[in-house]
Amino acid sequence: MRIIRISAALIVRADGKILLVRKRGTTAFMQPGGKMEPDESPAAALARELEEEIGLLASPEQFRLLGRFEATAANEPDHLVSADVFVVESGDRMVAPAAEIEEIRWISPLDPADIVLAELTEHHILPAWRQTLLGT
Image (cartoon, rainbow, N blue to C red; front, side):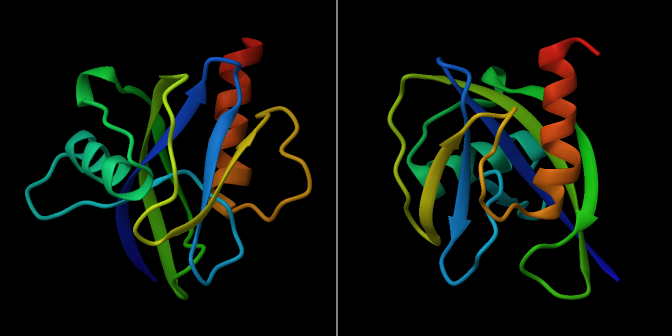
């Protein structure tokens, strides 16, 4: 299996909800973010991707590393994703789907409701964030 290196954001709104996105032509929701360009740092790639995908202007200094996680890629068969995931506090700034993003949803990290989640989100990022929230 090939490994795809990405950066992703766990974007937290002032009310504690987190942002998930769904790319056009797919079913799984995931964190916004994407692949790094050659010679681009994970944080720089994430800042670029957030502006392109959801119109959120954020600087790498605002990011806090949650961790690096690996899982089966949601949209690319026979690939694994290795993701540097950063927490980004959005406050009440507005975001909207752009580029390849078809839909966005704000969800409770404790109860994501009945939506299809990417493996990376469901089995790695959300559990890590819950541990942070619950202090366990």
